Image: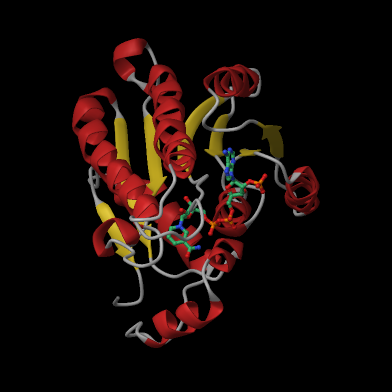
Length: 245
Ligand code: NAP
């Protein structure tokens, strides 16, 4: 069976770069929610470069869709690496304006989605369940530490939940051959930043000690390191990649 590298939300942005870099070493499976054209193009690009890739349409927060996606993945190989990358901001709102529907959607995708994918991966990877072990990398955010005041505290809080899950799950499965870590990107130049008012984004970039946004490629390299044997003694880590912010 092939050892697969699975990336949720791999159709564009950080997830797509993770998939492109991972495809140099592993057969890759990406999931996506709606951008089928971009997911298909990514698969074709990887194949054209000599790699193997598959794209599965599955909303990470939909349990039935995700269990079906993992059944499809089982037919392709065994999972060596899961990257919980899919995420949404819910748009900007102060806490005194935030709507319950926004909270529910952000939690459903960013928290429930990451838990469901991690659950399915652990069931397959755990040596206590007959698996061969593996690695889970969660794509959290600097927002979990900084709080995203005046922008999206709701999103920041969802990433705080992801950080806590990372530490707890890492300890839960540390003796079952599974490492679990998180990367906390700062401001990275992807479409998600278009959810933010441009003037606010410019002010925030000016405040970054390194004086620039990060790139999806840089985040992918960080994730790939955590997923690699070079990080064999690293688990439960929350790795900041935010240009000194
Ligand atoms: P992006 O460009 O908006 O891409 C988001 C990806 O997630 C897309 O592939 C999208 O699929 C997928 N997705 C969204 N909701 C989904 C759902 N319900 N089910 C399945 N897939 C879903 O965002 P990004 O900047 O690459 O962000 C990737 C991760 O990094 C997120 O978790 C984000 O919170 C985190 N992050 C980003 C930054 C940043 O500055 N960019 C900073 C810190 C953390 P479709 O294409 O099909 O819509």
